[in-house]
Length: 324
Image (cartoon, rainbow, N blue to C red; front, side, top):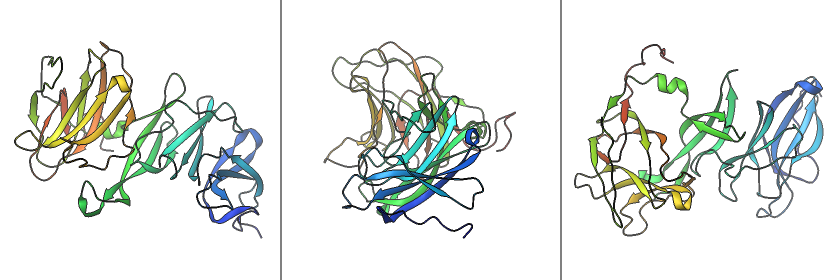
């Protein structure tokens, strides 16, 4: 029957055959559909795979078998496939290893697929992401969960907040994400918090400087230009209490090649469920770099301690950017 749904194939788990994604294969004048699946097996067995089918009319589909079967995960969710430049990128979300959306790349639609050093777009809390293109840019749509009872130690709840990243290709052809330009254009002119560089140092301890109070309510963007002189660590602390004791911090650990987010001080341990939220970070001492963060303030005033150069609350479109 034309247009009939493609039933699970023999040998595959009929309860895990889902999340189809269709794209045009111009080189072969056909349509390709990939979907997430797993073999019939114990639920803990790492038999997850992405399978594929082809069609010339979008009604009749021919099953082609496994498209990518690395035997790494128990199930493949939300597969996605696109071309950027001269490379193909295959996205997969999994929930048995790091519970992230990751990717592989290849010069050919049919592989072989290779993994970069950092094969994820975000931390564990960014889940089930899929992409779309407007012809000029590609965007990634994923979910950041809420927590039960709005408690830092509450269980993660599926759904939550939709977060959109813009995907870009780095010079080495790996993929990165950034805030979409249309979001930047929705911001007014920036307000400078400091006009001269701030230098902090301590041979073995903590040194900090409070720069500003956050705006009361609403969202804002923070741009930071930092230049660490050692491989120890430094932190951006925000949402602290009036005494400056309790708050949250992004801690950059160049020597360990990572950034982590936690509630500080972490006593009594532990105060925040941050499993899987760390991200890779590499910088050479003396090298300046820029970081951009997006935040929403709580209803009550908060204070943060860091070294940002600007913040911009959302209120009106920036001149010349439009209102998108």
